[in-house]
Length: 259
Image (tube, rainbow, N blue to C red; front, side):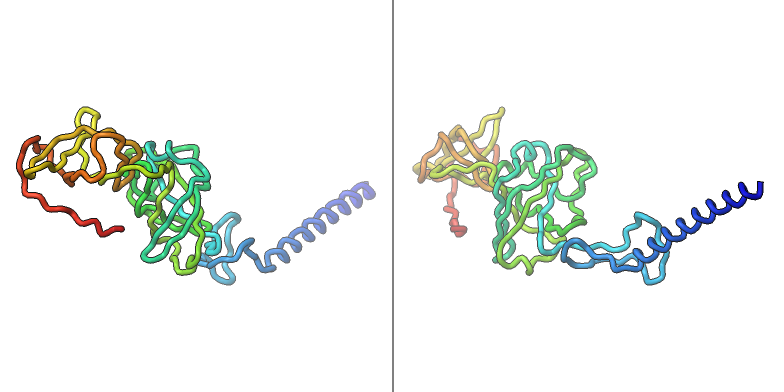
């Protein structure tokens, strides 16, 4: 019985010694510096020297300011037009950048708070909607919880990226489709009736003429005209729905200074 007791005691001692060794290794590892796997900016420290923290608690937030991306959220009409690899053109003040669509969330969410829905802006542009992000975090925007939103991430590269501030917005246009040598007009010149588009042109004697038009590609500001008007026609901008063919109007030609 004494021999058995000594054997059990020896086993228990060895287990305690092994446990102590493991604890010492853990303590030594915790005392070593913790290094991020990328260079960046420490933007938040949620602990002080000597604090005891639980496992899994986030105590330091680091942004990757070398590999920026933009993040936005879009509704159904825009999500179905987007594809990975599509080119993105950015502008901010006098700076321009490029990029491409790198991620489209396959699952829509009602909890998005990144940016407003873009469906009203048609196919070619997103406008002032993309938040510049580092490795993590987001910029709250308009909460459109009434419609599910899809998270979209886009790369951004170019000279002067160091002038951008993480978390602010940048103007972005995604090239979903492109055409060369097409006739375009202002999207604000169109009216719609029973699913068909029409507009008014200015004829001789400053009289109005209603014309039905067929359109192609659309963007936030302009549309492609397939038929209905020709280059050089004078088109009424922002027409009211009570205009009629034959009306005589006072006309003033708009000056396009965006060339």
